[in-house]
Amino acid sequence: MNHKKFYIQSSHGSSWWKLHPGNLSLPFLVLSVFICVYVLLFVDLSGGVCVCCCVWSIIKPSYVFSFLDDLLCCVYLCLNQLGPAYLGMELGVGETVLMKAVAQATGRQLDKIKAEAQEKGDLGLVAESSRSNQRMMFQPASLTAGGVFRKLKEIASMSGNSAMNKKIDIIKGLFVACRFSEARYIVRSLAGKLRIGLAEQSVLSALSQAVCLTPPGQGFPPAVIDAGKGMSAESRRPQQTPFRLLTPVLPPFTLFLPGVPLRPMLAHPTKGVGEVMKKFDEAAFTCEYKYDGERAQIHILESGEVRIFSRNQEDNTSKYPDIISRIPKVKKDSVVSCVLDTEAVAWDHEKKQIQPFQVLTTRKRKDVDASEIKVQVCVYAFDLLYLNGESLVRQPLCRRRALLRESFSEVEGEFVFARSIDSDNTDTIAEFLEQSVRDSCEGLMVKTLEKDATYEIAKRSHNWLKLKKDYLEGVGDTVDLCVIGAYLGKGKRTGTYGGFLLACYDEENEEFQSVCKVDLIINFSFYPDVWLDAVQVWEVKCADLSLSPVYKAAMGMVDPEKGISLRFPRFLRIRDDKKPEDATAAAQVH
Image (cartoon, rainbow, N blue to C red; front, side):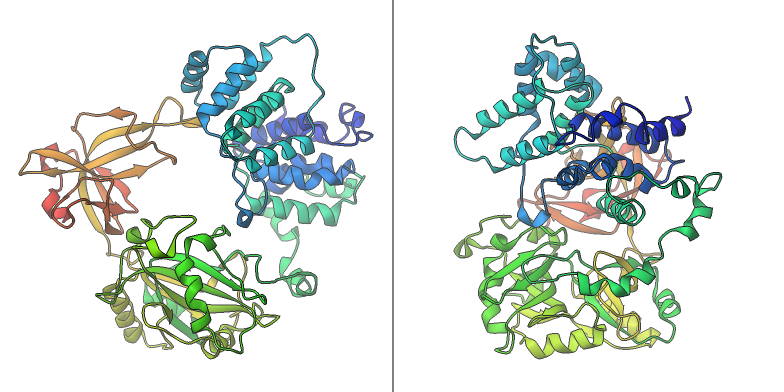
């Protein structure tokens, strides 16, 4: 089959699609079919088709056929989201609940559903096959994209004692109305595992190009369709939209206000001070400590309300009542509203020093009572993005930093400006890097001060470089660990191992002690699916060591209830020359 030809015919002019423009709402089946085609062309066949074209093919029906009310629903459904991250909407539907709903809706036994899901590694495929084998006397009304999205939001809004039963009833109602591939994608959406490899940035790029190239109610002009024929992806690149020309005219049409989080600016890694000097050449730059904590974007509204958002735009306000309580005493009277970019770091008030990131992770995540907080935090502020009604993202860093220091006061152990130096001396920077590591930081952030020094929202910029100790050549520990467990893969990795549990060797007790997982997949269960005999030794490189309540390595040597684990372990090679008992000893890890 000519897959590309099939794709174009299916999304441009097939008589089947022409039946739908008169409908009031986009059928969910149309969206499901387009997702199937996208997965076939881009995910399964691994390329050969422009990503933006594929993404646009998914949401095209809602735009071209004038289902504009469903456009936002389609975008969120494709991203497996219910809304912006800061709204915190979660379905709260576990795999067990989904299995029960599938079993009840199809009349199949729950045990058989579970067994088939284990075999296929995808409950969505199980739901689709179960639904296709079911016969009904009357076919329910067809699902629509908007209707499915509203039902998902209804599920997310439910709470209380009977909420789970109500959720199951809604899921069953959706399920019995499914046709063809609809069941697969509804179940995957409910499970939070849509598995189409679609990122938000791809959707935004596709939408921007679609709006420019295709008026609502029309298909692509022939000139646009034929423009890339016979050209490779590389040769088409120079013809893509020159965003550098569009960016300067966008600010008047954008709205940035406290209360709605920005996607943060991120840095590129670099391997040494010499590389930093080469990249920044003669540009003025500053070096800041890179603190090992959690990104905290602090919004102060004109009403006096304070809200805190994570790097992923999640609302962390209820997680940090201690930070909120100290804002009035650190901000100056001239500050009416603002947005700060900061890092929240675990802090030991007695020793007056930074604690490891793992300590911060032990804090409760939601609805924290200030009187019950055991892990204190210090806020390290490094940028000011908004001040008193004015967006500062187009201002250079030197200006933003000056306003930050003019608008806030430091309080030791509570609110401090990120430690920094402005220097172009290689030795000075190298010494500052070493000092940052001694001060329990990850390394340095190196940022331009004046030239190309604006705050680039949602971008990993070369104007910010991170110089971390584990990125440096020759830095980082290697250990020899024994494989003692394995985790079963899911989805495409069904039938293989997706990750492994590794252990060091305790010579005194003659036992293997778990120390870390080498992650080839995510969402591991707590215990491995398969325990293995300790027969093979792997050499693993790590960035650092950390305390962990999960792993048993060297437990009792540093902390009576916590073992030692590896941060960012990376497999290097199999050590065939070593016996299991020759693996790194627990005392050596300590």
